[in-house]
Every structure is written in structure tokens, then in C-alpha cells.
Amino acid sequence: MTRHTRASTWIRAQVGWLLLAVSACGTPSAGTAGDTTQAQPEVGDTATTVATDDAVATDDAVATDDAVATDDAVATDDAVATDDAVPDPGDGEAAPDAGPADVVAQGDGDAVDPDADATVDTTLTQELPVVTPWTGVDGLTAPVVTWIGAITHPDMETPHRIATSASGRIAVTDPRRHAVHVFAPAGALQHDLIGIDEPLGCAFGPDGALFVGDGATGTVRSYGGDGVMLGELEPDAPFVRPGELAWDANAALLLVVDSGSRAVSAYDTAGLWVLDLVIPNDAASPDGQAWLFPTGVACAPSGGRTYVVDHDRASVRVFDSAGALLATFGSYGGEPGQLTRPQGVAVDPAGRVYVVDAFQGRLQVFSATGEALGYAGDFGDGPEQLWLPSDATFDPYNRLLVTSYRTGAILVYAVDGQSATPPAPEATP
Image 1: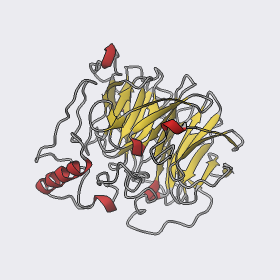
Image 2: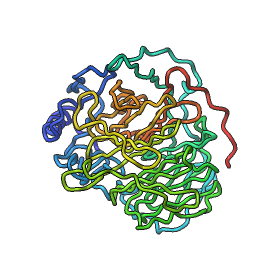
Image 3: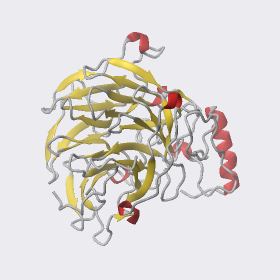
Image 4: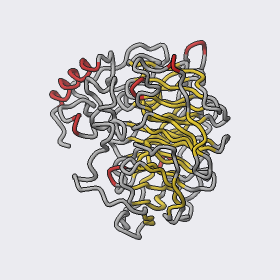
């Protein structure tokens, strides 16, 4: 999209903020949970803001006056222009006919340029200086989060949802390319799953099978490393928009967030429905809806807790292993502890919760009980910055991986100095 002049971008940004009644949504800066202000953009900022006159019709759409209260405008699959419209693939070409996904190993087909290697920033294997941690409420300490690199590839255009396997393989859905890219832990592209109409959520099962939610067909299917479809979930009612998936290793269940039908359900290894995550009537919205627009899900590594993001309620719901609601935290706004356009969520080994905010261009970190601790990431279009982040996950090396939808990159962060260097690129499975 043609970049507007700096002055006009700044003026339109002010209009967008007034419409959203957000007190501060400029380029965010790291701060303590007690901080109540964020930096406002200057006219000379090089990164364009997320509110332009083209926002409603493009993947830059994150600011409309009814975006927060309805599911009409969110960012990325759940938040580009409407709740049922991911950006047009490529330059507006029609989506391919539905059919079995194909795997294209690097250099073996049109989906991957044989002369284009995945780009892994060299700092992924370098030791970086320690960053002073934030101190949150009640003396709680936020994690030390340090950017260590980025994974990119010429064929990865709109990285959206992300998942990692037990061996560290990285899968990321790319709605505009109708593909799922699979990378080795060190960042080398292994293969692409292509031919999926609208890949949204993804998750690895215990046997390495990759589950993919297709927003166009309303299906959740599993694929082997050779691209052969292994099976399909059998919901009681058809999925409408399976926008996010997560594997609960402790309960051996696959969690499916169906944003379109406003439901979150769990399925067993045979693909059969097991339970729904239930919200009591007294916790539902005034119109009686349990969920307004769920978008993200993550399970605590220690088990017993599942965290689900409700985008339109700007909050996170916490459930136990039986699917009962335990707590809710977060509210709409730009202050610490508040969220604007929450999308994905991740939980680190210590139990801290990282909520991806597409509008603020960063992650907000909460304690396991929902107390605000601080922020991670920084808004912008630079190689170390996030522009329309939509999901996050932790890999077996304790690295935090975050998708930056607008810049086409997966940003990699070390946490608390505990992140390990992954092994050399593995063979294509």
C-alpha cells in the first residue's frame, strides 16, 4: 500500500485515536506496570501509524469506531477488515479451489523459491546484554525479554498464527499465501503446506501431526510431514471460523477457538468432541453471549489452566482442566492491565501470561493471576519491531516467538536469559 506523507499519517492517527477513545496508542515503550502514559508519535516518525484512510479495506485495519464493541473490524484473520475476511491473497487473485494440501520442500516447487533461503538474523546465536527487568505490582517481577533475531522468508507474506512441536519445529499460517510454512528450530525453511484456502489457527499434536484450521471451509484437519491429510475433527456442529488452535499436552486435548460461532471446545486424539469451555450466565455479556469474539488460546505448561482471549471484551478468561471458568482479567483501554485489540496469548514455564495486542504493537505480560507486570516488544516497521502482531508461543528452547503480520517476520526473543541456542537445521521430515 502506498505510504502516506508523514504529516497526513499523523493527522489521521489522531482521528483514529479519538474515535477509539484510547488514551495512548502510539509507539509503545517498555515500562513498569505502574506507568500510566505511553509515548505519542511525532510527525517525524518513520513508522506509519495503524490508522489511515485505507484501514477498513486493508490489512492495516485496526482503527474503526465500532471495532471494539463488535466483530466487524479486528486485526489479521480476526482483525483485518471484517471477522470473515482475511486480506485478499496476493494482489486480489481468487483463492485456489479447496483440495488436499500439498507439501513443497524447499526448492521443489513454485511455492518456495529455490534460490531464496530463510533469513535468520545472525544474533540468534550471539550472546546479548541483559536487560533490567521491570518491577510490577506487589513486588512481582516481569520477565527479562530480549530481542535476539527474526525469521523471514520471501514466500512468507502474512505470518499469522504460530505453533511449535516438541522437537522445536515452527509452523506459521500465512493466509494471503494460502500456506503453512514449517521451519526448523534454527530458522531454515523445511517445507510448505499449500492449497489450504484460508489457513488460520495451527497446532502440533503429540505425534508431530500438524492441525490446521481453515476459515474458508470451516474445517480443522491434521496433516503428516508428507502433506497427506490424516484426519478431520468431527464437531457436533460445523465450525464457522476456526481461528486458533492449541494442544494441551497435560490433558491430551486439542483446543479449538471458533471465532465465527463464538465457542471454544476441546477434542481428543481421535478428533472427537470432549467438552466446551463454559462461561456462567452471570459472567456473560449483557446480550447473553458467553463469548463476544474469542481469538487466542494457550495452555499453562504445568497444566490445569487454559487462557482464552476475548478480543471484543478486551479480556482473558482462565479455565481449569474441566472447562470451568476460574477468573477473568483485562479491560479495554491503553493503561497497564488494559488491552486494545488482544489477539494471541502464550504462557511461559514460570506461568506468566503474554497477551499479544495488535493495535498497541506489543505484548503485555501478566502474572498467572492476572496482575499486570509490564510489556514486551515495540511497535514499528523495523527489524526488531512489531507491526500488527497476532500470535505468540514458547518453543522447547524457552524462546518467545511472535508473528509480525504486517512486516512478514517471526520475531524471536530470549526470556530471563534461559533461552538456548537451537541445533543446526534438521532434515526435512
